[in-house]
Length: 230
Image (cartoon, rainbow, N blue to C red; front, top):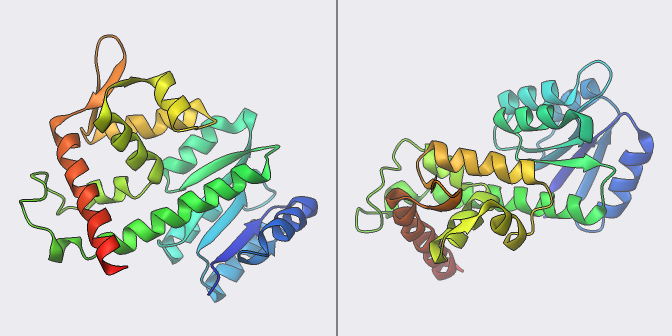
């Protein structure tokens, strides 16, 4: 069954263009306003919602917050313009999985969708961790769930895996992970630092903490049980 994607934008050309580009791979729906989108979300479950941030009436941030109340499993990708970058970061703090800038290339939209679907897959896989994991895998306490929630984002996991090999500067991480937006990487690095998985030295070089190194064991374990089940 194809994943269901809802595109929300008051610009009909964006809705039509994205729907046309994505319909071969996903089941795509469109809404021309935040109000219409919320009505649809109350009636139907969506895997991903792509919503414009600035819209008349109910804006994208309000749509995001209502979605999280209705179905926390739905991933939201914010569409925004360069002047509203602070709002885009605020949206991620409120639970958005990603954001993309206008004008955007289709490849960036596709990458954002793929990352969001990987996030969902990780969350589903991690639900069984508490039953399967033991203290031989990692010494980090994951029982409260905040670490697993943080690790669900693939950019954060990729960052940890990159730093497991050696230490890198911000610019090197940006280049190696092929992230187009420095603000986005900065947000994810701050998140990893906040739960003490990553640290930065006086030369602004990033490395894993002791806890971060332990989490790498967990990620390897998750990959193993996933491949075993496949």
